[in-house]
Amino acid sequence: MRTSFSNMNDAIARLAAHERIRAARQHIERTDEVTLARQAALSAIPAPTGAETARAIRAAELFREAGLEGVRIDEVGNVQGWIRSNGSVERPSTAPVVLAAHLDTVFGPEVRVAVERRGERFEGPGISDNARGLAALIALAEALARNRVPLARPVLFAATVGEEGSGDLRGSKHLFNSNRDSLRRPVAFIALDGAGLERIVHRALGSKRYRATFRGPGGHSWAAFGIANPANAVGRAVALLADLPIKSNPRTTCAVVRLGGGIGLNSIPQEAWLDLDLRSEDMQALAQLDVTMRAALERAVDDENRRRVAGSPRLRLDLQLLGDRPSGTTPRTHPLVQAALAANRALGKDGELVSASTDANIPIALGIPAIALGAGGRAGDAHLPTEWYDNAEGALGVIRALYVTAAMAELQD
Image 1 (cartoon, helix red, strand yellow):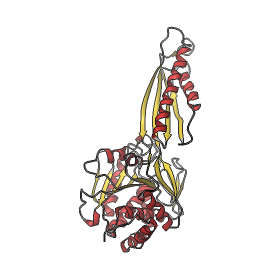
Image 2 (cartoon, rainbow, N blue to C red; image 1 turned 30 degrees about the vertical axis):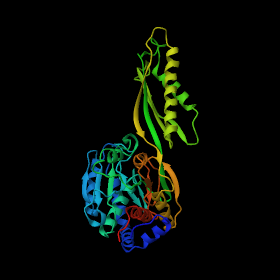
Image 3 (cartoon, rainbow, N blue to C red; image 1 turned 45 degrees about the horizontal axis):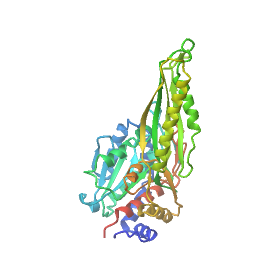
Image 4 (cartoon, rainbow, N blue to C red; image 1 turned 120 degrees about the horizontal axis):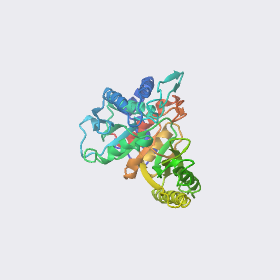
């Protein structure tokens, strides 16, 4: 049965009625507690961005146990495994569907990531973002493999590194930019990220992250007073950036997120710095904001230099790019987005089309149809040590991913 996209609601209904898809759904429902146990166990393995190895090793073991083939950990630490099309060795001429969930968390190695369960609620740093996505990824792989769902296209399962913060989507970038010979252009990319059922991320929220460092001679806070002060320049820059005219359509933001510098209470610092996070759904708006931001930083340097003691050294500005996430959109009319909306309707849930920064940013920017989906349940306190996950209708998140994956991979007769 080749899936027709002429009426996606009908297509999803036919998929849901298929014998093997029904069996896969029953497997997901029957093993819901197993999925929860995996989720808690994976969450309890520390995986700070850049240090995901231990969790990746365990994810690779679970990939193999689920029935995936060709499981390996690639050069940057992504875990990859395949479901072959219709049980055969994947054909290089057949474009795959890619399913991904990121391994890393926002929490550093000093944070205790133990998980506690209170009834249906799990509490622990990273229990939802993204232990839930990982557990759902494995549950879906197992349901497809063990029930021998006859897929017309191969499906690549990927647990990626570096999705959070300073990771700058490193795993997703490597998956698409470094493996072009081994990974044919996918027909669809689906990221499983966190909890929830309503949100369907089809707009990639682009961002640029910078560290602006102001450097000068420094000196005694009394004896050298009047020289150009990097801390003053930071203050001037923050004020100028706060007053920048910011577009509301498309929504665009510029936020100072960290600042620091100095060595003591009686010393003018030799350097001071601030970190910036620029975001927009529109590449042109983000590029224009980048230009405006640079002008504001240069003005802060010039203003401080004009006020320095005559003949003293000038401040210098060093602007370092820390992260670059592209933006873009998978059109709401694309079959992938329509499949996600139809899957929600089939499960009796509303669908909300939204934007976010996820692993899907990279394929979207490359023109590959991509979305990100929550993996069921409810969650709160994201990116805080008090993060929690409640498994209310958790299995439905995995079932939604099953329907969307089957729609894009298609079923053979």
